[in-house]
Each structure stands twice: as C-alpha cells, then as structure tokens.
Length: 480
Image (tube, rainbow, N blue to C red; front, top):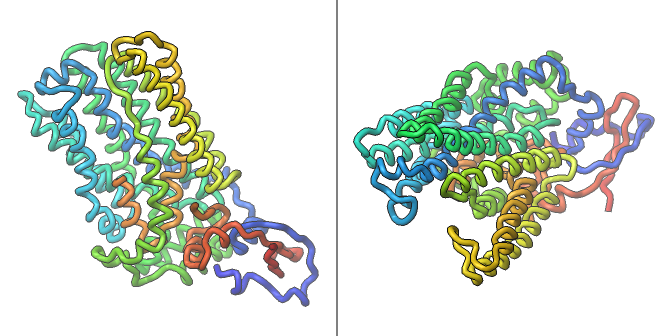
C-alpha cells in the first residue's frame, strides 16, 4: 500500500494518542500495531509446516550438491569407474551436476511462473528422482550413465531450489517473511551434514554398498517434496496474477488473517497486490528477461560473493571427519545469522560477512604459505606443523563468519529484491554463480523502493508516525 493512499487520516480531525519512530513501510507498521500476529495459532503453525516443504528443497540441494565430494574419497568407487580423485576425470564427473543446473536455466522461470510454485517444487523433485535412479543403477562401471544421472540431478535441483525460496517467501506472513526465508537457506547444511555423515558411516560397511547407499538416499528428500507439494497452499501472489483472486484472498484470510476477512494484514496485502502486481507482466512471457535487470546487481552480488567461497575439503576418512565437523559448526553459525536478519538488518550482516571473510582469508593465505614454505603437504606437516594447524583453524573461522552473514541472505536477499514478475527468472540465475535494506517492508513495498532514485536512502530513512487511539496512522513525518 502506498504511503500516500488511504492509510493516513486527517490529523486535524483526530487526537494523536501515540507517537513512534520507525523505518520501513508505514502501512506495514500500522498493521503490526493494530493487529500483532500470533505465531502460535493453529493456522500459523500449519503455514510454518507447509514452509518446511520449501526448506526441504534447500536440504535436498545441500545433500545432492555435497555428496560427490564425499563418495569420491571412497577408493572402491574410484576403482569401480576406473577413475581418479583428481585431474580431468574428476573434474568432468563432478561438473556434470553444475552443467545440468546451467542447462535448466531457460526452463526454471517458465515452469514456476506458468504452473505455480508448488508445481515447480514437484517438477524439480520428480526430475531428481529420475536422476537418482539413473546414477544409482549403473552397472559395469558405466561412467557415462553415472554422469548422465548427475546431469539430470543438477537439472532438477536447479528448478526445485528456485521454487522453494520463492514459495516460502510468498506464502509467509509479512511479519515473519525475513526470518523464515533466512532459516530456509541454513537447511542447506542439514543436507550437507547428512551427506557427510552417511558417506562416513557407509565407508565402514565395505563393498560397493558404501557408495551406492548414499546415492540411493537422494530419493528421501525428493520423494517427500514430490508427495507433499500439492498438499500445501499455493502462493497467493501467483494465484492473484493468474486471475484467481478469490483463492488468493481465501489463502490470506485463513493463514494471515486467522479467519478474519477484515484483517489489517489481508487488506494491506490485497491492496498492494492490486496496486503493484502486473497482471500482464513479463512472467507471462517465458522469453522476456528485460525486467530482470532493474534489480539484478543487488541480487547477483549476494549470490556471486556467496558462491566464491566454495564448500569443499575432500579426501580420506580423516578429511571426511573434518568435512562433517565443519558442516556442523557452519550450520550452528548459520542459525545464529538467520536469527539476526530482522534484528540487525540485511546490510549490516552483509558488511560484517564481507569484511570478516576478507580478513580471515588473508590470514589463511599467510598461514598456508608458511606451511608450504616449510615443506608441508597433505601427507607431511613439514617443519612447521603449527602453520598447518593455524590454517585449519582459520578455515573453520572463515566458515563461521561466512555462515553468519552470507548463508541466511543467499536465499533471502535475491528473492526479496526481485519483483514478482521477474522473481522466477532472476532466481534461476543464482545457479550460476552497497545493497539496500529490505527489512520491515512487504514484497510489494520493495518494488517501490528499488524504483526510487536512491534505494539505499529510501530503505534506511527514519519516520515519525502519529497514531490515534485505534492504532491508525494519522500523520507521517520524515526525519533528517
């Protein structure tokens, strides 16, 4: 809802009862004051449960994306395919997953925009199931079939990992959108931890089952997503732009308004849908990417910087233990970061993560060079084992700093800054590789912010609100 329409009454006719100082959307603040949301109601809990399906998309991405590094440490796996854990063979086999994700780019937007967010999650999960069967049933050391399966896996994960964050963001109550979507991306570590743990545990079994069991377990999360996708409510924004306005309103009334059709939250969102959602936008044209470039820089920076960090230490059983421990500690710090996105804000977390990662990375470069200079290798500590220990410690610290700032925002920030019509296509590009503050605003209000001359200034400006006895905003004054 635009701040100049309807939400501000004649200040001369009403007595001011309360004065508050806020940043963000005025209409959002008024709804929070008039109708504080109840996260413990049955409808709210049901919506949180539905969001878990989107969370599993991130878990599946973490499991599938991390699994190869773990099974490639298994000598029987390499012997079966007559391969190596280094060189061209390892690079080609490993990269087939990423190649599949890139090949899916032209299809991600049309699937999620044409059929809906639930259908996007289902379609991607179904493709992952197919890829799992192809790669897990390989016989006779047929590496071509295994690589084909990894290509299909990457293709399906690209669709699902795009649909999941969009679904969670678009169905979440505006008051909980930030923290809910931030927690979503932390679930990547639950998949990564399981991949490391399963590979480590299966290594004690012996035989080819040690690497086949982790492959077959890729069916777990994709199967749950496929089964549950159509048992959860659809995105009200997708319903609205598909001219299913009654269904969109019914969803908002049930889950955001707690059954009250006159809820301030329902009225706020429907008014913004009517004003800001483009009923004939580029999301209806699979070939049109022109609208994407309005906010592409802000969203791409978070994703690109996040991908640069990497996520792998590979090798023998001791190194598998390191991978598992590091994944666990990163998950804990990611949860801490996710809990801070609404308290601290997106921009401060990004600044902390960028500065912190730069400092720690410099320390890693110094200690690792000292380790190498004194003859240290992966098999020998050389004459300066302390430098090797310090390098490992800084790697863990780097993971902690990265997880606090980047992990929660990799899934949250891009989906927030992209408007509805470009969201599916824009999120697809995160598989390739100074921002504005987005807290305390609805998704539609963010479109207004990024269309302003100075989005950063618009997002951080402070306002003084005068409220009447019923909690209605009667006057808005900008500070500074």
